[in-house]
Length: 299
Image (cartoon, rainbow, N blue to C red; front, side, top):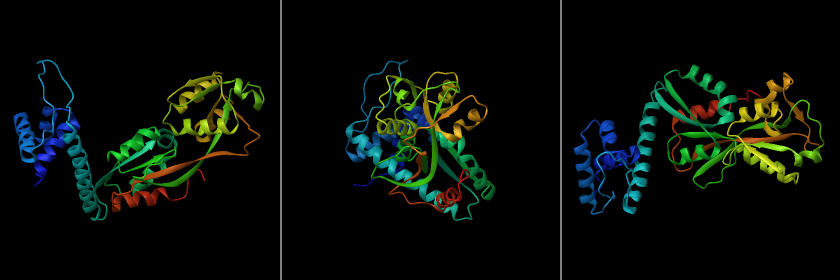
């Protein structure tokens, strides 16, 4: 059996864009040519890849694959991911004068850590287009697995045999309250806790600390933003655990107070650098990783 990569590429774009017409636009061919290519690919492989049915003129639906189609799409995604790696690697050999780098960063890292490193990298390699994708730890982990980004910097721990994980930085955390709040450590259980959504690194570290203190809060409020949590605590909405880099300005302005927990001299968490285990690291990616491993801007 021979695999026609031209036809596979058309199939990949149809599934990726979830549209025959959008795939045609991406590939600069007609929509009938796309439909013909999919049918030809199915004939060559002797497999049905796309489920077909009657669809109203004004009705849209997602491209639905058969199990064989799903298997081919996974192979296609891996093939074209390696193709992009090969292209980037060849481009990077010309003294890193051009190329693209997609970096995933969880929200705190994107807002408070990465700017200094990206700026210095851009000064050294002005021809490199660096794109930063922002999301929580879980979404960045998934983006890396899906080959949408080249590497990721996250706050939460990730356990996945497909990923290489190494500690990048250590970040100090603090418990914060309203400046006028007055209660003991034992009273923490009675406070409303403001927490991040599940999948966030801040959520995980909050849960671990509460477990170590045997605290089971009666009231919780979930907010998908560290800055939003800080502002809510400043308004007296409750207590929270956040990175010091996020709240230090509000603490200096006396809009927040750091609550000392006797059981912990310091609270901290690790920030991690993630790369794909079976994906070659290009010269461009290695140069950016080397930049990330220079001394911490907070250390």
